[in-house]
Length: 322
Image (tube, rainbow, N blue to C red):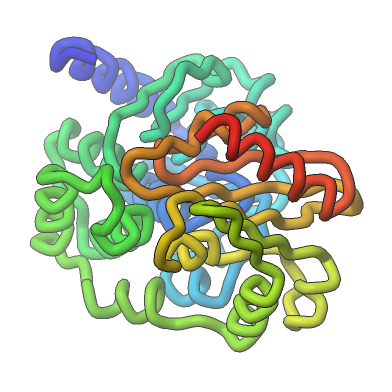
């Protein structure tokens, strides 16, 4: 996308938002801090511009999310005709909105702001910028509007940038990533709070779940794969199926180039989170199963079969496509 094309797209987005009085913002199922950060960061900014904003997320909130983001603002039911504009962030397709998919797809005025590569057509107006995080897309939009994030927005957006960059360690991190982090820090982002809450704190249940993931891991050459089923979550004392970045931990093992964490969604249905080191591309593995994402971090859902069958299926695909 050229600079002129980007400016034109931002202007269309600005015009749509200015014309709307009531706005609903959505992020994806199996949420992460970047999804929450881009949703709440954009929403808080729009509220400052006098808009009525509501937030929707079909996903259970973790304790660290609740400490860092204003998750009590999330609503559970939507009457889509009550909103002039629907926006999804950090999300490639409406299918990943969960129970809000049909409301989004059937609304006449929709928008998507994202950083995931690919061509998608679930929104009437779409913008994807190749940043490390969706929060940086929101930051650039705020700047396009001639504004700066306030302290709350800076905190929220920095949290998403920090986590989606894996603390500035993944290969998509570049000079722009650090420049955007500096901008947010200068606007009041608290780096210590973001580090402590989003990176350094973990519930006892998640610690137990991590132990179960390690017990079940298998290493095949430079591929590591593990799985978690409903019983694993129950034994860990968790009432939801979130994994809070456990996929990243698998890739930290020496000699591993590609990792996969398989997670049960419901009986005989599983999702997969893929990670890889530089020189590999897990987005094409996820795409093989109808998913998507980034070169180094991607995912897919709704793989059918037993836990063992799905693990064998995924391992075969990784070997063929890596």
